[in-house]
Structures are given as structure tokens and as C-alpha cells.
Length: 466
Image (cartoon, rainbow, N blue to C red; front, side, top):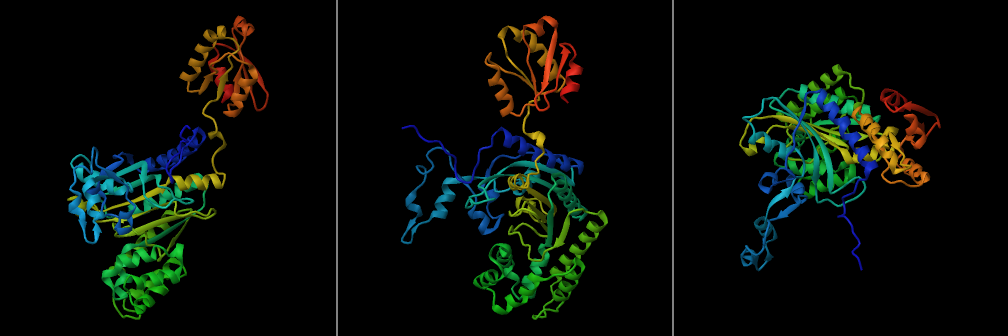
């Protein structure tokens, strides 16, 4: 019995129609990136695990796809060295047989790229990158194991003008798509302040990981997780009211400033938290001056569980479609330092193209003209007519018109069906009479309007079909 083909869970095939829609997404995002001075690069699908490990926290490291060393990877290893009374040291064995992994995101490879090519680039350095990433996550609606990210990063500048521009890029992209979004902003220093005023400054990662799950598991479960991660009930009680603050952005900052300045139950002052609030206040002042059209708000529960963020953090949600984050990012001050280039601050965002696709599809926001890449089909009534049609088709293509010649001489109904399935709007039927008269007939299949042109009147044909 023949094997039934399949693809791995969490991955997808994309047909021609879907690719037209996906390219619409990529092209729209690219066009906005370019208007802000970003230029494109690419990095390999695989990176050395030494580049990837430790950059995403314990949770992220678990989701890395590891690549088995080429050749007989296990044959080169002394397996007995990884056996003990407790069993097999799986982590040690994996490290021995896997030296590479598929990239988890585009930010860490970008940091590696900057360090490796630092003498070839000018700072501040703006780049965008549109490539697939892989995560060994549990597949579910809106969550894939292979998906595209569309990143824009600027590195070599600490100015929050860069954060403003990223907010403007998000605003412009989703306005072009016709999608209403909520842009949520927090600051990692404020999260550090949570830990400090709670009396657990060494637990900032544990607190962040728990808070990052607030939308998924709810406040009570987050409180339980923080206690499981070593916080006391008293410490959780200091953090809890912060997670449900409401009011204007100025009011939220004012309340938080009081708490960070010794006004919480612990009485602890957090200088780091106060600095984060200063940065939030400055950024929202810039956003107000810029006149962003999409809704922007401070969300003090926004954590984004990636260890490398050090300043502003962003998350974007669709307002009218139930799906997870469709864009996110933040500032990182220490990422290139891991690779030997200290004091190189950067900030970036990543658009989740696959989720954006689902939103555009669900809200029926794709433009109608994406359905077909071909504008005009030349019917093939008789192979003897081909030498007459081919030069006309070539001239139209050289003028930028997408056209096809049906390859086989067959029934006209079959060729009409082909045009209908591919949503080709115009059809040309040329027989012996047209050849003798030196003309080309072109029919609008939607309206039924038909016109006749001299075979040399390329401009006339173009005007009719456009």
C-alpha cells in the first residue's frame, strides 16, 4: 500500500492563493519598514546552540528544536559516560550529540550578526528581517511550530525616539490592513520594581514568568504560581493590586510612582522601578505628540517572558478577532554583550505574520484583487495560431501585464473553466479569421464586454484590461 503523505503537526502547506495573501502581508510590512529607514538582511535557519541557549529563559530553552549532529552522532559518543544510578543524563547527552538548533526568533541571531559584522555596519543600525522561526510548542489554534516573523530592530541608540517609531510602524501597518488593534506597553524596569518592593529582588524572572500568563490563567492562578515560585503571601499581596490598576496612563503612572517611592505595604523604594516609570512617561509624551491613530495603553501586567528585555516592552492584540498577540517586542541593553560587544542598546518589534493572516482571513480584510496573478488568458483554439499569439503575449508581458497562453488545443469550455478557477478576468479567443484580419479579440469575463484590437495595438489592449 502506498504511503499516505503528511506534514508535521504545527506546520502548514500554502497554495497559490494563500501565498498571494501572505505576500500581501509581507509586502505591506516591508513597505512600512522601508519608510522608516530599515533595510533587509537574512541569517541562517540554524544557529549554534551556544548562540541560542540561555537567551530565552528556561521556558524558551525547552522549546528549541535541536539538530542532531551529522553522521553517526551517537556512534561517536561514549554512552556509558552519561549513565548513572539515577538513569541517563539526557541533558548532557543531548548537548553532546546536538551542537546546532533551529532559530527560535530573529532577535538573538540579529545580535549575533551585529557582533560578527560590527566593523562593516554603521550605528545606529536599522534592519528588518522576514524569515521563518521554529518552536517546539504544543500546536493549537493560532500557535504553530513553524511560523514567520517580520522583525524591525535598531541597535546602537538609547533614544526613545526609536520606541516611538516602532509604535508608529505598528500603527501604520495595521491601519493599512484595516485591523483595529490595541498596542500595550510596559517597561521591564517597572517589573523589576515589582520584585524589589515585594522584597524579592532576586525573583524578578519568576515573577515575570508568572505575570506573563495572566491573560491565559487568570489572577488567582498567577498568585498561586508566584507562591509556588518562592514568594510569600505578603509579597504577592504587594504585587496583586498593581496588576488590576485602571485609569488614564498618567493616573496609572502616578499611582505606581507612589508605590515605587515607598508607598507600598513593604515601604521599600525601588529606584529601578522609578526609572522605568520615567521612561514610560517620556514615551507616552512622544506618542501623544505623534498622534497615533490606533489605541495605545499602559498594561502593567504585560511581562513578555523573554529574559533579554531591559526597558520598554510592547504587545499588540487584535480588537475584533479572538487570537493571541499578533506583534510584540521591546528594548534590550545587554544582548550583544553576551557575544562580546557590551553597551550596545537596541529595541525591536516582531510581527507574527501567521496570526495576522488568520485575522485578515477571519475579518475578510484581504483585497479582492489578490485572487489571481494572471490578467489575460489567450485561448488555444488551434496550434497553428500559436505563432500569431506568442509575439502579442510577449509584448504584453514586457509591458508588465501578467498573461498566459493555454498550452493545449482543447475544448473552449475547458479553457473557460480554467480561467474561472484561476479568477482570470480577461480572455482572448483567436482563430483563423482573426489571424487573417490581423486583430486580437479580448473579452471581459465579468461584464461580457468584448473589444477588437490590431495585434500591434499593445497600448489599446493594456488600457482595456487595466
